[in-house]
Length: 336
Image 1: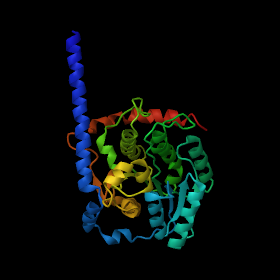
Image 2: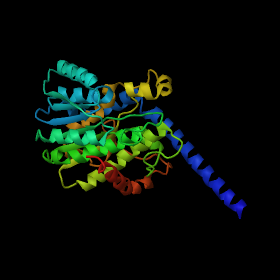
Image 3: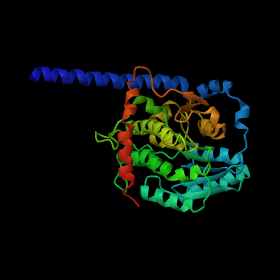
């Protein structure tokens, strides 16, 4: 009996090892063929320039993590098109520098800085309360703020840092902005910057990574949750006039990538997209007529993309999202 049990466990462990190896290999190959700068240039041959020429004066846009990288390029691109843009940043000095640079480069003075640590539910709630006092409609919320910590770090509220920013922070910010997004109905939209890394992992309810910690895998899990959350929001708020979209920027050369994945950054030197190219689809999603878009969908290089790689066995995992949402609700309710 013990021999049979040991054999069964060994077969299961081998199957899981092979599946994880396949996911990693398939993701690496798919990414190398599609996520690099050369792939962007190739895909851009099908882009329509007129789709990015829309001006959006009078529209209020919130961009989290806006002081550098894709967040900065997104905020600048929206400001160039006349939007009123609110930069949500954790660091006041870096936020002020980004604010000044965007105002100078675009000539748009309707760009403002809001300070908020997206790893703290309490700070997000405080920000939402302050911002709600402006009583302005929010036309576009860009959930861009993200972090990839390779080592386990616990926030002051007791959560694993990657999860706190990428999942719980994104969830709390989005839910708390819904009343202001409704004010912009039927043109309101939420765009969450996910990652192609999510292709390498299924959805899991182990939100804070109880195993021996692997920061890159936790980040990928977080990004998978963002995609599934967006599906849930699209259904939950389908009658509220709010569209929900996730997107993948490709492999872009950002300060975050250089800091968090130095070996990866070095190995792909010269092949990365620019931050502007990474932000291209975020801005495109903000500008398109909503009837052209599919709420709940995942976008890449200005087109709807699939959410699962062949034979990766990740599709069925999205059935766990209701359990994840219940956990997020419980966690978010702990802080005032």
